[in-house]
Length: 49
Image (cartoon, rainbow, N blue to C red):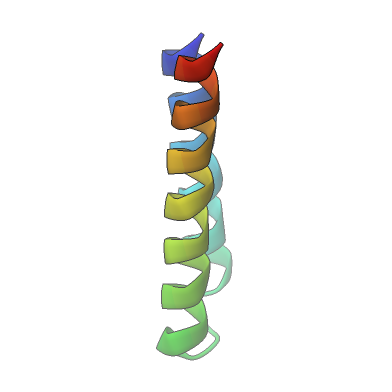
């Protein structure tokens, strides 16, 4: 379950980085870190269950 979520999140993160490479790097970095934070929250939520 957690591995499936991790795979989806990594794919989503790659898509975000690829689609936003044309836009400035600060925006891409923001998206990258926001997905990282989401990923951590999902792991914590999955472990609490």
